[in-house]
Every structure is written in structure tokens, then in C-alpha cells.
Image (cartoon, rainbow, N blue to C red; front, side, top):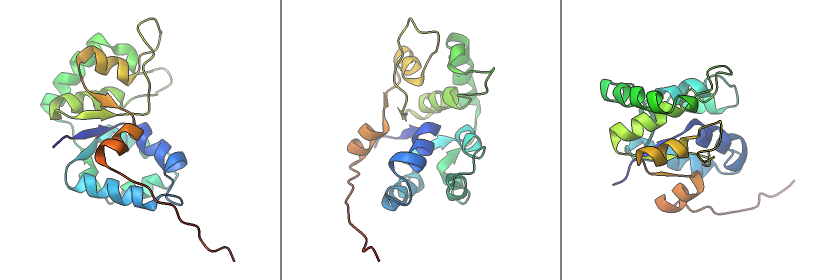
Length: 163
């Protein structure tokens, strides 16, 4: 069984745009179930990034400690190597992408596939994205749409009666 390590943007963008609770509550039920059985997870650093905003997702994650993995020695060792070779992954000036190296480090430690909304920027860019680092370190990655296909998530539509 594959394991999947979810980046912050998969959860935040999903919550606020693509799979909002108002439109796709079943999606969040499925993610909850997949987290409970260990198929998906996110690093505790992802939780910390989510907690910085007050968009409802923060409330949703509060009672789901099983969704987030704590840092251990193996993850720290992977993180050190990632930061030594790909320090531009984190924008320390603007305090952005703080969880990104943790997502990759956890994927390495857990032999998991990274799920992110980021796309590669290539070797000539000043910025480095998760897929670029994954490619360099031979870590599998995919976007959340491919993840939904791979897991077998299917959406159905219905119309509410308008009064």
C-alpha cells in the first residue's frame, strides 16, 4: 500500500477553492478516513502553517492528531541533507514554504509519495519548488488531482432545492 505525504497547499487550496466543505464535504470525510488508516499524513510543520490562518480548516484539523506526524531523528537527518543541497526551497525572508523541506524529508523517511499543488520550475529558476527537489532526490510526487485519481476518489453532484 502506498503512503502519501500531503503538502500544506493541498489542504489550504482544497479547503478554500477546489474542494470547499460547502461543495465537497465527502472529500474531507475521505481524507479523514485515509489519515486514520495511515494512507495519508502531513508533517507537524504543515499543521503549524495551517494554524496561521483562520479559514475553517484550522478548526477541522484540531481534533485530528493522527493526520500529522511528529519529527524524529531520521526525518531530521533527511532535512539536513535537503537543506544542504536545496536551501532555496525555503524563503526565510518572507517566512514562506517553511513546511516544504519537511514534506520531502518525511516522504523519504516514510517511503511515501509527495502530494503537492506546486509544479516544477526547472534548473534555471532562482526559486526551487518541491517537485524540483523531489526529482533531484528521486522522490515520487504528484499533484492532488492525480492523487484523487490514484486513490479512486470520485465526486458526485447534486442540486439543493432552492427556496
